[in-house]
Image (cartoon, rainbow, N blue to C red; front, side, top):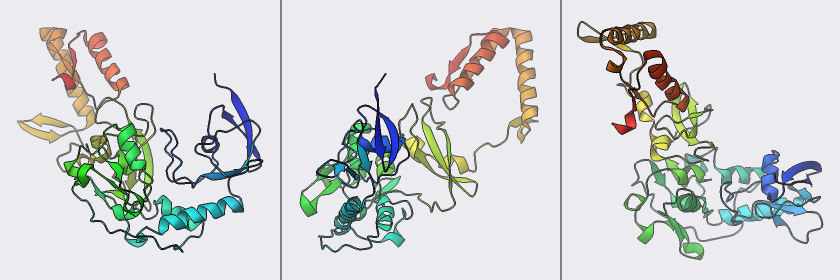
Length: 349
């Protein structure tokens, strides 16, 4: 069991596990510290410098994402000195950033925009080189607008160290630095598998799903992805009774990651061919029926087959789209209630 330490943040005593960074301790205790490059599943990179905090007795400000929490230290997250550093960081970022917030599909969700509003940074006093890149729309699920990229490398790290695919990297130096594929090809010509984990980790509008809609008035519903048996946790983004987007949740099975199906496979929900009620064949024609009718018919047919031909005349096929608990109950029904071991799984067919 890890040792627990005590520290003070903004005058409030909190506890954290020994070896935890100051930022992690703050996150665990619901204390807000801004960050643009921090990723919970990876070692800190410390490149954005937005998470600086002031530690009493320390000569310099400390990056909270990499500085360890120590027993008895007193941390201040929003002193005037800290806020001035954050304003300077945002000022430098904006010096090379194309500002087109009202045209951006991520308006209202962009971390850069949120922090600029919070710290009162409207435009940059510096004049950096602003590059103009063509939007890469080659991928069928998301677009890449490098004009809105802030080089936080979250997408690169997600691709290289979480998805372990290595489709993108940071290339160039200085003002020519850009996130790109090998030989700067379009993303569709790279090793990209369209998992969308880069999209989920982008803090700005540089990576946007093609289906992106305004999220004003939308709500998040935590559930389990039903595409396979892994059991990834997801948030369904629901607006006006319809699912408009999916975001990965930090579940035990997926830890904030999703595959291309779980991230982008939404169209089946609203497909006109999707069955929404049971169908029973009457006089050779499939006719809509109630669940009570359907269950009664299934039960009678199973009992009839068991009586006339024995339990081994019946077979059940489980589904990866069901939970483990559902599949357990399914096989239990066939083995215990019906009396047959003829149970298989759709993935083997």
